[in-house]
Length: 267
Image (cartoon, rainbow, N blue to C red; front, side, top):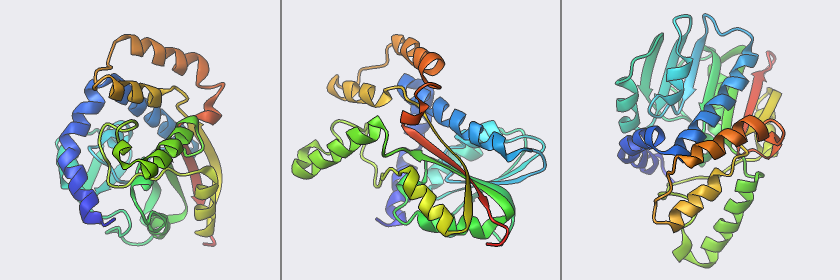
């Protein structure tokens, strides 16, 4: 899987992604939950003032919008020109610099950033370990790396395993159940895998959290079966109940996995 194919895919789908997350109840709820996870992890940085922050795989600027402040300077990279075009068109509170760049070959000098985060990106990069290596190079001593990615050991991950197995047996099922469209690469991660790769690169795992126990993956399947028609306002009530009353009690089963890692000063 080469980067050109991945970049072309996300450039072609940029407008659809941007519109989807604004107008689709299921996708919008997922996005809100992912941003909550990211913010929960970032609050552990201790201070959020006067930081140089790097967003790897910024997409259409979804996280830059909520993290940009007058006190910080954000650098954001993405491999897709289409995504960057949308991101650059938005207004931000603080200083934001956009760069077209691969996530595994960053255009920055060593030890530049206080915080690097990459949200829902590594599952789309075949050699994602190089993203971790590059993050290590670009982080200051004691800097923080935050990664979020779908959790392969969640109930949704178990379902994905079943579907992946079914697709191998019956190729006609490929992308007929779980996803709205075919992505060029989508390999979910586990806590164990993240921990091993990060520690091998000299990071200390400070905090690992899972979130989003709501069964959005089931609604995706129902929507597939129903010909794409599943956007009823009643879904908001279901998601509200899950978010308010179930999330905290069962977050260990969450579909999204986040890790907060600190670069050891001796690395």
